[in-house]
Image (cartoon, rainbow, N blue to C red; front, top):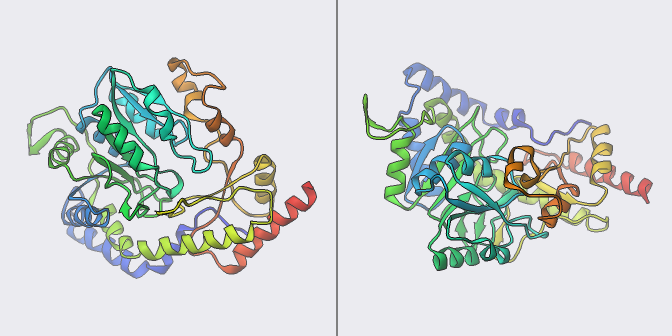
Length: 369
């Protein structure tokens, strides 16, 4: 049996007629850049995230970059964030001229440890960039208190967490802005790259909208040096269809995660935790075991896709060597990087698939002893 980490073909087949109709509608219109589908999606995503504004962009990475720019982060500033994330999180900080300052993670949630943030704040600190990793919101109440105390901006990295909630509030609605990714494998994925910045701040939305279109509000008149970072009409059309099914798909992921949590309770693995008051949307279902590499090899040999997210924490990546971090500086992130393993949890999985995964995990631990 072959089980991928995500089955985009199965998802597409389930809504093929609607997707094809939406795509052909854009092709018939020949209106590809910006357009009505983009405007509709911006309104819909803003409503879904319970914020006032959404600005469609060409990637989640650009949502981070333009979000930081719109919040006034510039050369010489420092931004506190987590080293346990995809590189785009810290990459965006560097690309606006600022310095990423890494804070270690909570080993249970894999999100930034808010108790370690204040000791990293300096006179140059201007923002906190928490990541809602794997579909679980960071502990936002204390982060918000710290930001208010020190007059810092908050940009949420919601790339993996659209639809996740913290005490009833949606990811992206806590900080000054939130960055969303529509990369194809995300819980709400386009047919290519795409992203969005969401915010309740009209000035942030307006500046992001200016920057994403070459600093221009009116063709050939440019008020700022901007970017070519527009979400195209074709991707927006696809996402407008998919958004109608997002809650159902998230419910499927949660149901599958609950199955795995129960089935794996007798094995020597740490399963994902969902703290009280939070809704985990399981963009990734993460197991933790000191035998992660061997378990992954076993699963892959038996047709089950699995991999580490993330095998090298950002502070130890070669591209950030100039920051001066060394092994041992952020021990929880470093330990997690060799002990985490993602297994499939996508909503189209069958009961047979889930049972097969448990069977193979059982076989591994019986042999491993």
